[in-house]
Amino acid sequence: MRFDVLETYLTGQFPRSEKLVEATRAAARGQISQSDLETAFRQDLAALGQLQRETGLRYYVDGQLNWQDLFRPFSMIFNGITYGGLIRWFDNNTFYRKPIIVGKVAFEHTYLEEYFRGNLLPDTAAKKAILPGPFTFTVMSQNNTEKSFADLVDDIAHALKELVRDLTNAGYRFFQFDEPSLCTRSTTEDELRIAGQALDTCANGTEAKTAVQTYFGDGGTIAGRLLDYPVDCIGLDFYSTSLESLREYSFGKEIGCGCIDGRNSLLESPEDSLRFLKKVREHLEPKSLSLCPNCDLAFLPHSIAEKKVRLLSEIAEKWGNDGRA
Image (cartoon, rainbow, N blue to C red; front, side):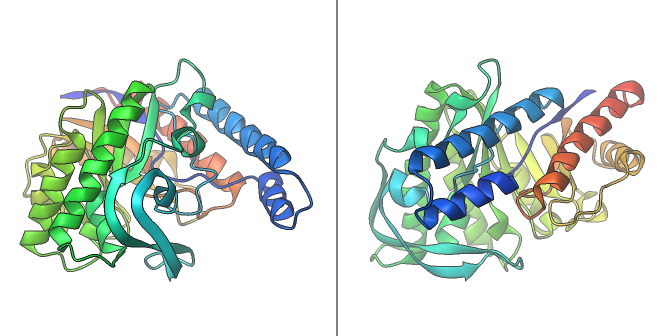
């Protein structure tokens, strides 16, 4: 089992700085040009890249700074999708525009550099892409076609597979598929099977690292299925999932320990976090461990999110000092 190094990475959207928020509002009012707005985005992304370098994160994300929500870019990247009204994002005080499936969903091979800005990250960075999982994408959409739920999940999975291929060619080395809907609703065995088949479509054939990321719900209720999915890492929200609910399972995969809370400004104690990680190692005996936030840090003020990233580094350093046993 590999426990000598604790890999750290981010798992979702990063908050915009106050300067970028102001620039976005000014652009919406026509007070600054799109070129000036792009400059503000690039400054934020450069700062995020520097933060990830300083804190020694294993994989770098671009923060999805110009994404309005997890799905909206795909109305441009994929054919067959438009979007509708604002819907509450699970139990948070944030919203997303509901995707509306109006035709055959297929990858258009366009807009990649607009929404996946890894080319602006440091050249030496191992880049990570955060993608909506095909099951959650379908659950959160409105189906205006005659396709069945299972067929629509499959279409989205194949479109994502092509996207993964293009991003791999662009240098991405880690793909995270967000599947909160697996553990935030009463999911049937048939739905869990459909989700697994779709992830197999997305992840099969890539040499990059892959993860299914759950959050906002108890991953213990579906842990048996998650472990069967063809991904390298199972990401769990340990603010919604208890260790006790996982004890019966044999974890032959990496666990992405979401024990830095992206929805609470309170900073975790590094010592308490280290003790918890040791409990995960002792009780679940996973193939390996990584440390990450339980969800997007975009729910937090920018300054707090930055402190949480530095906290990841501090905990990993403590693990390296005394967590090798």
